[in-house]
Length: 271
Image (tube, rainbow, N blue to C red; front, top):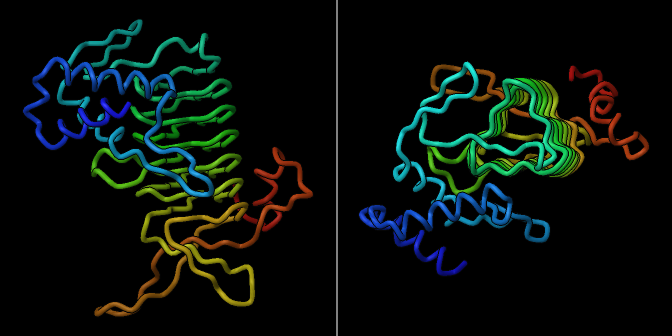
């Protein structure tokens, strides 16, 4: 693996090396390992996450060495550089028309894809639901038993190239039309209400206690989060700016599966 890593780093720094068949084969080997879940762009490292930058670079380098090709699926036609993922029955993954996953994305056993999209380099763990029109961006890391509700947008890290992928840990519920981008980390069993938007610069404010506690780029475990706003002063006057509000925690007394919805309903918040 160290030899593979070294070749990727050298090609990243000197793009003329992409003409070499050996380098091209190395890049393709990395994508195959990603597709099978044998390596990841990011992986748990204790309580934190370790980003394997060289793997992400291999994904970026895969595009210029691939040639455009026509892909025909029944009456449908695509024209792209990337193959589509195949072999879902063997993988134990349910894929509802018109769901699409690109080759190089890993889908674990028990994943359900409603009409949705999973991009190259992404990792989607066991038992996760990718609901209708949800998108999992390139290199995003989605944990076990996560529910990505309808229209959720999980950002990727290819354009622009950012340091860390989005991480949604085990047991999270991401409500309808939420957007999570720019390497934000949503910790285990957190619940995001509908239309929450999280970027690296978004203020995530815990308002459940006597004093507000502010976070950026990370939602604490089991937090129940809704959209909010705060007043910010500009040269032209004071205006409301979007933020996210932590209004409580999921209650351990509530059954895990039920609490994905009930955690929001307990606070009179739309799912």
